[in-house]
Length: 60
Ligand SMILES: [Zn+2]
Image (cartoon, rainbow, N blue to C red; front, side):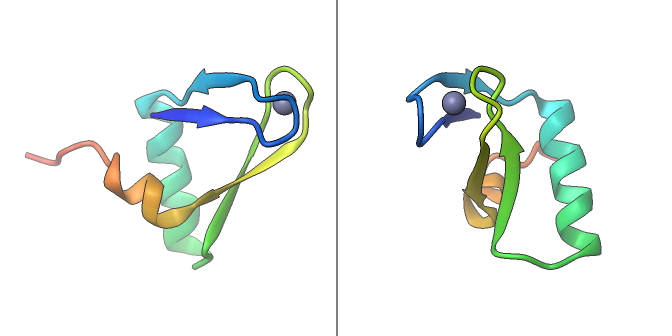
């Protein structure tokens, strides 16, 4: 899943592992946005939960 920093426009990929962790956090604390830190400028990026769920790894 590609994330773009709103501050420095740095684009990075969120791993499946990080996505799974994010989803676990969201399930514990329902929220509309999940904060991810930009690896370049360290700003908190708000990612819509809907976007994360769309990229949820398939459970088979
Ligand atoms: Zn940034």
